Length: 75
Image (cartoon, one colour):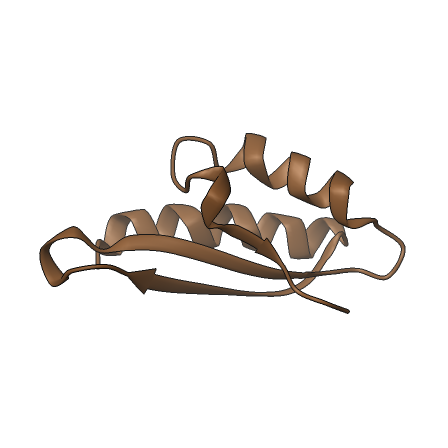
């Protein structure tokens, strides 16, 4: 796990919580030990829809997490 990458990801996700469109999130790491890749699962606030949150996250995390690594959890 890359601690700097984790800090960058969580910083952006915390901004989403502060703004009120995320209620919670989980960052997990998958793959071989030497090639761990982040995957983000988020729980959106009730007044936001999945497509909007997914698009926003894909742009916000584009340099950190591949779009395929972003999951919107069932609320």
